[in-house]
Length: 577
Ligand SMILES: Nc1ncnc2c1ncn2[C@@H]1O[C@H](COP(=O)(O)OP(=O)(O)O)[C@@H](O)[C@H]1O
Ligand SMILES: [Mg+2]
Image (cartoon, rainbow, N blue to C red; front, side, top):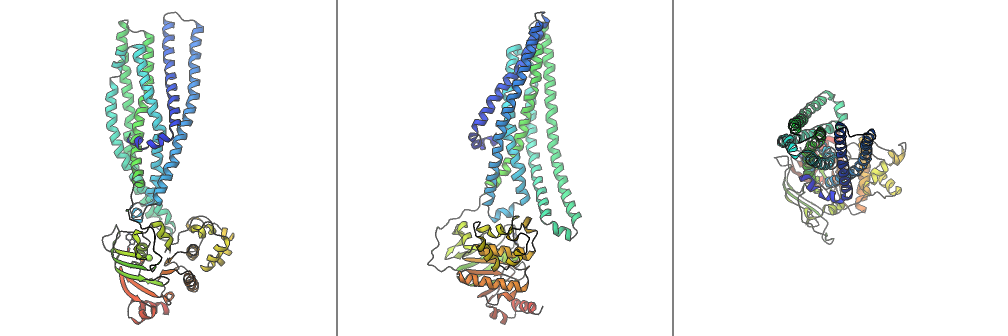
């Protein structure tokens, strides 16, 4: 019931549909009681030789008419109830998606894509199910159960009713126990289903790599191990499910036995007629559905509660709260002042960065290089505010960047990432991602700056060519240049490129770097480029060499060449290669 309390906002919003359903279901339940009563009366009339053929035919036609009315009413409540619960599906998915878009990098290092997808689909469907089928079973079982018991007491004999219903409370206690077990096992089954989704997502997104390395078999093995575990967890849930039905049927059978025993005694004492006992047994038979429905409702609610908690955990996950300043004083120098004492990823114990002191003046160029794993991307991520928990401070325009609103900061910094990310739409929309209303001239201009215009012209539909999932129809270099063109289209004060030209040939790379210099100088932009090709750093104002998470060397290209260290060794190695 906690779930329904928390979904109160939705029931209030859809109150008309739920009230309509309640009214129609009440009418149906009351109508359903009539055939048992008419049948009992008819039997008594026949036994007492008081019935005529026309009377019997009239009673039969009454029963048929009631069935037709019930059929029509059932159609209407279904439309009402399920249109309401479908509404909840879209609202919860929008809520979930909105919440995901606001989460920080710490959140995404904790939750994996497969897990999030399973919560957004499977768990939301579970919760919605409880507001459709769940509500139906509650209303139906309560109304029909109570009215049947009332009819049994009022129309036949209340002592017999009490006697016949003795097994029911015992059954309720047993079912409650099973409900708790069901909650526990279903929680485990959903958790493992998330693991399964994570594995599927991992395999699918790396399918080319898996094929290249011939790793299909180990991948299938990994998947089948998790699939078996999911199967086992589901089996545990099914075992509990399977115990629900027999308990109900045993209880009903016991009730019938008690009714026949008690009823026979009452008939011999002439306190009950055969017709009344028949009606009573028919009523008892009609109790099967409300009891089954009640048990089923328990089942639905226990599962939905598990799912709702999994959804809430994501929606309510709070990013660390920060104080924001509203404006950046344009009179102060637009320098980026980095002083990171130490930073460690939440999942790690050793520092990924330490003792990083750097001042990047406005409208200057900084090159970052160093061996792989030295912390180049990590430094860029801290500048982007992906992580805010580190010892030290990064200041822009003399303000701690953690005090600048994320939205504002994103308009100041634009980043081209190491791995290009493209959407499965056409090239034009991919370039215009940050400026959807850009003109075709603007798009062509930035494509020329990124040296991709000629390639695009050679595609079958030019800028309107669809590039497939994650740009599968493009080469690595083409993908990288499209993401650079995208960044050119939305100019910002700090332009960061994290090794974005690794798949581009040497000449094109130099051309693009030249265009970047021209573009940033003209627009008064600070440029930070991470690269492993040192020749492109020759004209940079400052170059930093990172090693093992800290600064190994710093200076201009000429200064660094004079030092006998990583930079000069690597530069000479690349030059002669
Ligand atoms: N999300 C992450 N969680 C934990 N450790 C990470 C994460 N990203 C990078 N690291 C670790 O931080 C170190 C620096 O990585 P990175 O900045 O990507 O190196 P580079 O870009 O210089 O090749 C590496 O040891 C890497 O394993
Ligand atoms: Mg990197």
